[in-house]
Image 1: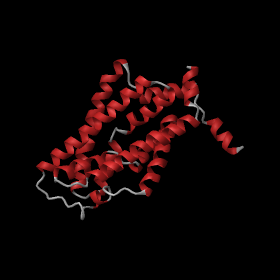
Image 2: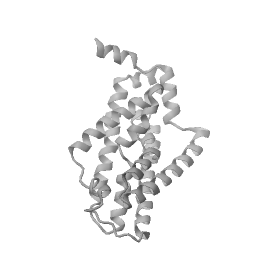
Image 3: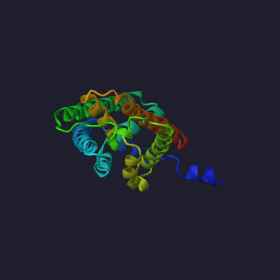
Image 4: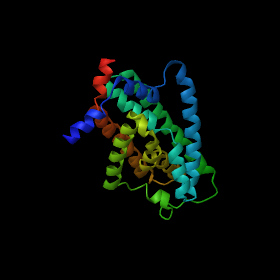
Length: 221
């Protein structure tokens, strides 16, 4: 009974749907300003993350996680799929793909111009991201669920920075760029970690949206 009551209390209403669409989908006159902000914040978060990794600074990397904007288009992709909006899903995943290219390219350039020789074995920020394990998957699934729930409820949106820290997106991509610039082959592990986080948001987020009846609410719209 308690579980059914919780689900009933958190099912999507038309107001919730409108709020969610406003957060995730930027169309018409809103598209260009959103893309400009997305690129600026991604550019800055990549610089912060990359230099944080190079300096082996956990605090700096955490700062980059908080301002990184990649989570929004990923959650938008899974929401669009649940709603049956293929065009929105394609648009959102293209933003994600462009963001991935931007982060890896910029971090690789920074890695090439840096005067420091990066050690993949002694640098904890790199070492912790080139060998993902089951723990990373569990955290990613839980964080993906939390991300979808936080986006769906306006009263708990303050939880999003914590979710962004839990499910790191930009730092693994920065590690990919850095290791590639150093001629290391450890980039595959960091890319696997990013893909694990990406797919976990899509899967776990989609399940949460389905449980909360996002699809039904979008049909009734």
